Length: 102
Image (cartoon, rainbow, N blue to C red; front, side):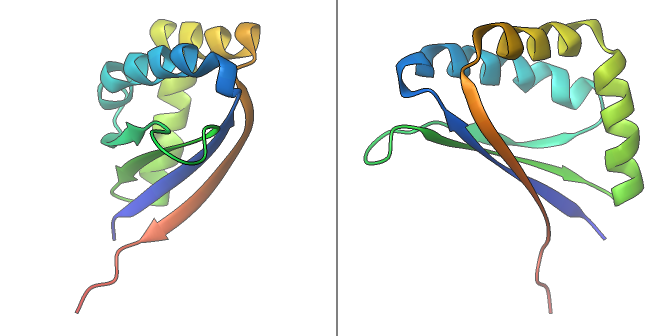
């Protein structure tokens, strides 16, 4: 069963450009570490401080392996550091979903 991690970010609206760069960095890092990246979504109209990401995995075990690879990857570590140093992510929520199928 495929699971998709739905990540909801609350971001600093005055640092949207930094969050967008952070998101763009993940576009190559996540697939390299084993995630099936569905994409990142930035605020456009309306609410200016909420962004989303969706990443799919073959199983919860595959997700756990991915997290270990991500934490060991130099580019991944650098991207996490970028977010921590610049504090453009104010809160992050993860929801694990499965697709409804017939």
